Structures are given as C-alpha cells and as structure tokens.
Image (cartoon, rainbow, N blue to C red; front, side, top):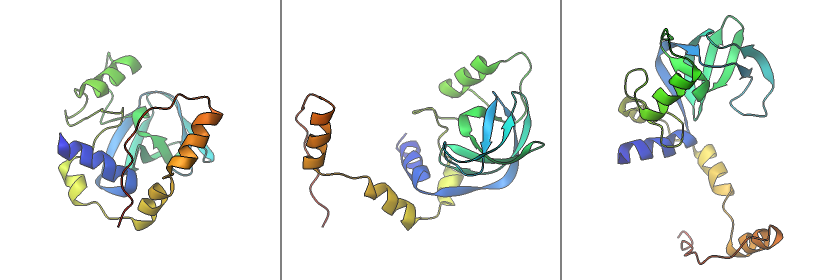
Amino acid sequence: MKLIRLGFMLGALMAIPAHAAETGTALKADAIKAEPFNDARTVATLAAGDKVEIVKKNGGWLQVKSAKGKGWVRMLSVRKGEARKGTGYAAGLLGMASGRAGTGKVVATTGIRGLNEEELKSAQFNATELQLAESYATGKPEAQKFAAQGKLVARKFDYLSAPE
C-alpha cells in the first residue's frame, strides 16, 4: 500500500511515458484537450464507446489518439483495453473503484488509477513541477486571513517546521 501512495504522489509531480501503445475505450463523452488541464483548449470530443490509442500518462490525464483527434482526456473517462459487452458507464466506474476493472492492477484511493511498479521505476524527477507544487505553500498568517474572510472556524493545527 505504501508503494501505491508513493506512486500517486510521484505521479502528480512527473509525466510518465507509456512503454508500449495501449488501446482503450471511452466510458463516457468527454472533451479531448490540447493540454492536460481542465481549462485547456478543446480540440475534439469523444463519445462513449470511441476507441483510443493511449500514448502516455500525466497525473490523472491520458494523452490519446483517436479518429476524432489527438490530445488529453481525463483518465477516468477511458477504460484500458476493449469495452466489455453488457457493462455500462456505472459498471465501469464501479469496477475502477473496486479495483476489479481490467487487469486488476487498478487502485482508486482518490478516483485515479495508481502507478504500477514498472511505471515507478521509469519515472523521471521533474524539478520544475516540484517547484510549482512547493509554490502553493502558505504561512500561518495568510491561512488565518483566508479563514477569517471565509468565516471558517479555527482549529488547532501543528505546522511543520521550516525546511533547513
């Protein structure tokens, strides 16, 4: 389980290329984006059941090629491999959430498939992404001001010591 949590954290900081082209099927209609971001430009739209070739992964996004275009789709919108007859959208989501979809190597602690051991071994450190993640840190005064503006109730919280 620790390996899976570590994989999730590492996956948020780096892009991990797929080793071999995989196929997949759209579980639902979704936008194909130019970049792996919700606010990126939409280049095409997948319909439920559309076939895709998975090029690579980046966090919770898959870069795909389809008859409708190439771009990025949310990972939860695609089932790896062939679609199964008699299963609908809900069954596909339940399979992912239970870890029983596809090869059985699916982990859904936060609704995103975990990284397998092979992907973790091939991961590359990305200092720019780590720096970006660290830029979101805030101090106690800023947090208190934000809480006061939102009329949030204060709770005791032990802050981490400053890095050396």
